[in-house]
Image 1: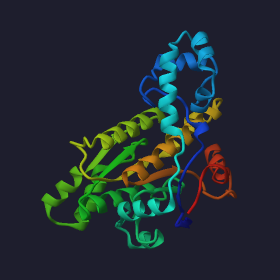
Image 2 (image 1 turned 30 degrees about the vertical axis):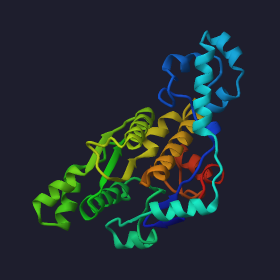
Image 3 (image 1 turned 90 degrees about the vertical axis):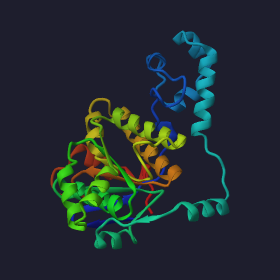
Image 4 (image 1 turned 90 degrees about the horizontal axis):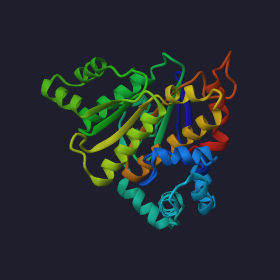
Length: 299
C-alpha cells in the first residue's frame, strides 16, 4: 500500500537485510560497550561481520575470552536466523492477533482500508507543516479514549503537545474524568538520537516479553515522531553507518509490531515520497526516494 493524500505519503514497511544490523550494547546478553569497541577497532561492526569471523583469531586480536565470543555468537544466530513456518500456521496466527484500530478520521480510515492494522508498520511521509504530528495526536486520542488502549509516543523532535491532545479529547467527550483517563493512557518518551530510540524500543520489547507493564497497560500503538530527525545527522561522512542504523531501526519496529500485535506509526519529514522531487530535495529525501526498491516492501 503506497498512497498520497494532501501531501502525506502512507506505506507499510516490512523486513530488512540482517547484514545491516550494527552491533550495539544490549543487542544480546554479553555484548558490552568495551567488547563492541574492541571489535570495531578490528573491522567487525555488524552481526554478519561477527558471526562470519574466525572467533579464535578475533579472541587473540581483541584480547577477549573465546568462550564469551562463542556465547554471543550463539545468541545472535538464534536471534537473527530465519526459521521456517507453514502458511496455515501463519494464517491462524494472523486471524487471532490482527485488530483494526480507527484513527479518529473517517477519511483516513477509508484510505487505510478501515484503519490501522496491528502487526504492521505504517510510514507517514510529508513536508514540514503538512500535519503529520497532528494526525498522530488524533490517532492517540482515538485509541486512548475510544478504545481505552494505551499509546507510546516516542518524540524525537519535541513536537508532542499535551495541550493539543487535550483539545482533541475535549472535542470528543465533555466528561472530564474520561479526558483525564485518556491522557493517562498516552505515554510520552523523549528520544533525541537514534541510540536512545533503539534503547527505548529494546526496553519496551523486554517489558512486553516479561509482561511487566506497570506503567503501560494494554499497549496497542507505538508512534515514532520522527525517523528523519534521528537519522539525518548520521548521513554525513559516515553515511554507511547511518544507513545500517536506519535498517536496524526499521527491523526493530517491524519486529515489535509483528511479535506483540502492535500498530506502529513512524513519521518521515521529507520533501516527497516520489523519486521526482520538485525543487531541491534534502539528501535524506533523495536517499529514501531511492530506498524502497532495495530495502522496503510495500503492500
